[in-house]
Length: 473
Image (tube, rainbow, N blue to C red; front, side):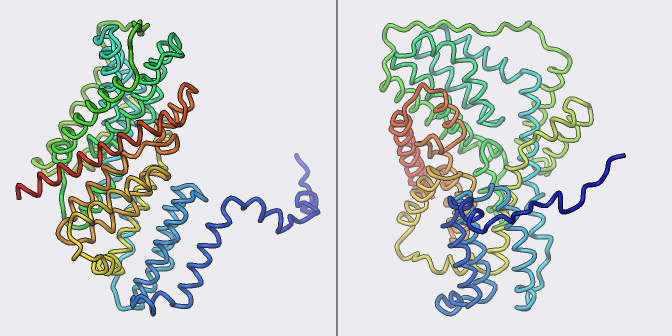
């Protein structure tokens, strides 16, 4: 039997000085001061009087500003901020809405964290786990790259195609890590050759672009779809791919040509030592391929069958864990932080709508300036903000505003998601970028120059596509 220590032996004798705590918070002092300022302004109702807002709108604006500060500075993890949005909506906003005479259901805030979009993305994570656990993603990558031969431009194209294709269905971070494991031995054969940089840059850039192709490819896609659903627009899985895949293909081609032109491959013959696989598939691999095929078919046909993509994702989760293909540790390894970030964004949208702030913001936007200036502003903001902060957080902040602009909600929301995923100029812009930069084979200027070029190409292509679309209406 252990003797319990007295309380005074556990608690430190010397209290922690407030100066020590304040010094530990030094990186986030500006964020803390801003949040305190917003709280004081709300308490004094300064925004309510100066901006002619109702009390619910004023409080929601305060919640929005606090959330923006935390998402931009990352003073706390992004998913914690998302849960904070839920807490502020329930404990702070709901009583104010009820006092204002609005009959508000708390369920609208909870639903944001476990709705159709969440289940769709969770199903995507499960598919990703299946393909990685049973080696099918790696096997596909090996097979495609093997078919490219040893000619440098073909190998580069193979890397781009595989990275983008896999990123449509599995985590772009996992894809980038896997592809670097395959290509690193080749790069080390020519560490000083300019073409080695092309090989290294092709993987993160293709992963970022490929994620645009499906609703589950990257969080901004799901955020745009979720807000559009709240606004009464239904975009099916197949409908998203119908316009996104051609855009992705064209962007990948431009990426390939840009890298070939920027980094010559003369005098290089690439010899890949790829892992050899048995020609057949194991029973578990066959089961995974069957589940993957049925899932994709279910997602693509959701507009015809009436079974939502979220329900399809739910059935996949039940089937894979129920049959034992995935185990409890796999369930624990699901990217729950991403799911909570999605939920936080949708919860913020629910708060903006319930308080009426989205309508007020839409009315304040000078629509008289015309469609194109507003579109340009949203695209520039999406690209600029996502360069320096999480593209998920950027989408969560900009898409609600875009959806509030009556008449072009779908165009604005989609183009923001595109630009958020096309911003890749810095190592911190996306996880695949960080992996590439961490290899030590690149300088920041290499990534910056090529990344900015891709962002500009995406901007021009998206702008041109919308111009053609509007011309045909």
